[in-house]
Length: 312
Image (cartoon, rainbow, N blue to C red; front, side):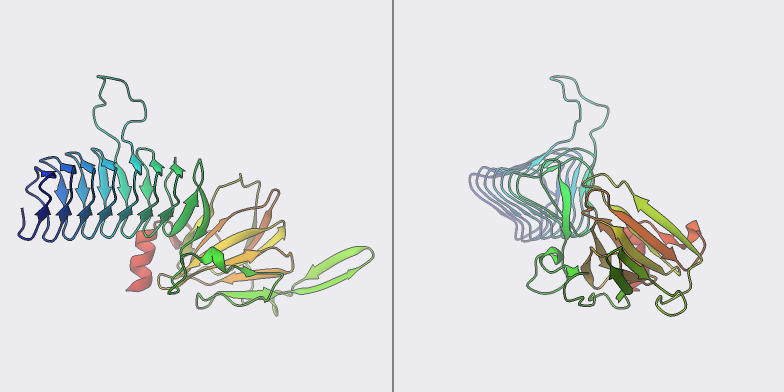
């Protein structure tokens, strides 16, 4: 055990792999094979099982049990009485060959009384709301709430703002431009009379590129997230032709949300911007124009790989 580790007289820390500055408080119990990083805070009544790896500067509040197979990366916060699980089909005295791995990525936060099902990953910087039941993996920087947990927004890079949802850019409102460099809201011409409305766009004038293809996304189930990728070279122009949805944008240094809720207002997404569509209204239809033909090699589908390329 490193120097500077504090164990309360009523706490038990059997592990010798504990980083400097970590504090183990009263009635907490750390089993012998657990690995705990530096400057962690394990509050009263925390239990850490053997096959657990915890990074640096992790805070685990009172009443949390961290079971075999759980990995908490650096700077994770776990709120009071949050519940981890590691066996989808538990039976008394019947044990699986191995327990499911649950990973909470760097900087993520889990609210009080949330339940995390086994085998999921809580993405980089994500936030799980109090009482949420997480049944599937959470995207990086996403905010999830409810039972089952659904994406309700994305965290912001702006100081003092907990989430981007607090200030989505509305197509029908002020049309403020996104804070992600290069991403642009484009308002197309609209004409209406007693027969209805018509919106028109000139590819050579109104769009930032001449499209090579288009595709439509529709029938998205409630609570699902679409997109979740970036392109190396392909440019895209998004139009919500029916209903509404929100688009989360991330270039590795800036994050913002745009609300698409008008068929004559589109969003230009440049290369090297991670984009996700979520919070679809019933019947929402997304029309996407793309500057390149489909090429699987042009995609970043892994956020860590995208982040490494975007920030180098």
